[in-house]
Image (cartoon, rainbow, N blue to C red; front, side):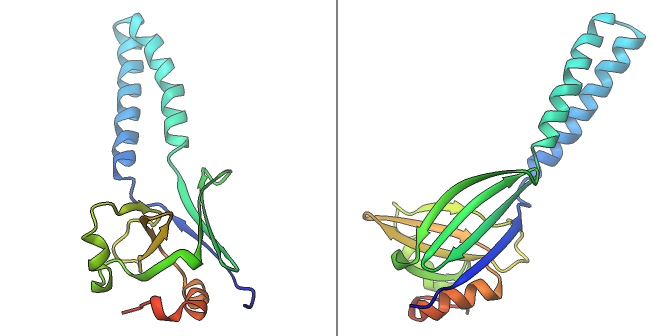
Length: 167
């Protein structure tokens, strides 16, 4: 089997609550500081504490996923704040049962299984091409949602053409 390699980095766009949290944190911090300066000096201390809490919460919101396909291994990692990398999962493509777009009917038989475990490593943007990869290891079914590039998709298809669908 020939050596294959593909690397994909996808920004996580699913975090709508994080954007709302950012607005709320900034608003509460500003309100506590203004009220502390104008009326109640006791509110100034929580306002200063909220500055540090807000900075750390906002700073840790940026997240992107990195897929690394080398030979028959798919490694998935999360990169937080463009600096901290943590490996999330590793899959062997020999355990791949099916790969198809998320809304494909090829996945219907897997979705009816109540023991299917779903892990979403995609951006969450419905306009992007999101694929589901169904892995079966140790009798457990797992659906992994990814956003492969054309290069990555072709590498997987090259070695597992009968189970990769692009409909």
